[in-house]
Image 1 (cartoon, rainbow, N blue to C red):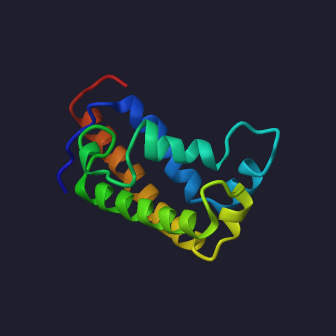
Image 2: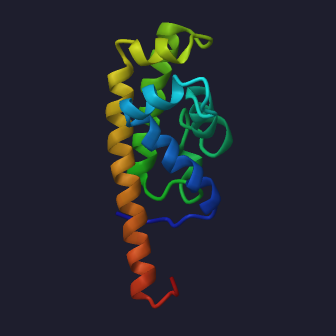
Length: 136
């Protein structure tokens, strides 16, 4: 695994929690469907597709908000899975329609794998900094 580092760590600080949210059905139902909470699916999608990454074409994010080719490949799979659900339910469908869509478990599955990889890569990078004597 080649860690390309992160040129835009602030972007990654948004991307990782968005991926984790897509990996957690409990979080989605408790947070996104609660009208008193500010976070919803649209927020998560904007983070991953518009603001801090391009899940539909993540290769340019390598070294900026994504560390490895594996992260790029998994983000592309996430973009494809989400796109399939969006095509099935319609872009303006409410969050609940997405969560109940037959293709939503595929979104959760690839997001869970991507979350695991991203968190592991971040911990490995942190360990390398610690071993190099970087102050914590």
